[in-house]
Length: 242
Image (cartoon, rainbow, N blue to C red):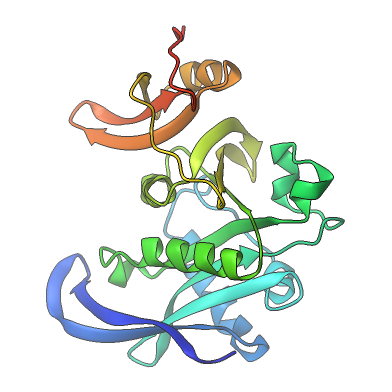
């Protein structure tokens, strides 16, 4: 599975417009894992430790075929980004266990797991393309549910996951910090409810209260007063949030 499944051009470099640079994406092979691990360390060392899960080397080896797949992005002859998708069996442990799934749902869940892009090439929409590609891979594998986790302070990942239809379902400690638990049912099409409440991303107390009442987080707005999420019920009914 070395064929190209993504391609395009990078038009920003180091935060500035640049001459178009071609990139491709392909599913990685075991021989690529050393480069993935090195890129993971480079990416995680550039952000606050609570924003990105520090994966083990074994995690990447396991998710190259045995428990999932890893999509790699290449430009100028090097790996510049990666995205992991987990395809656990119903009896395998994964962070999907935090979502309270039934045995039947556990058999059809995919985890939109860790991802990273070199700082040099951020601003080209690569993270969102990695999300889209992994959701498509989940569908192709017969999975009906996609789940992910993201730190509230990791706005790029939060923005991309919400934009691709995952909604916030819970807020819990995980992976060394607070994480939004996010889910999308791939066999359903839903739109954000008109009734609801904006809650600041930083207001974890009010967000927890809203989620406990059965609301979901749908849309990210990066307003001048700070980033906030639209919370509402899937049935459109409204309820005050303390």
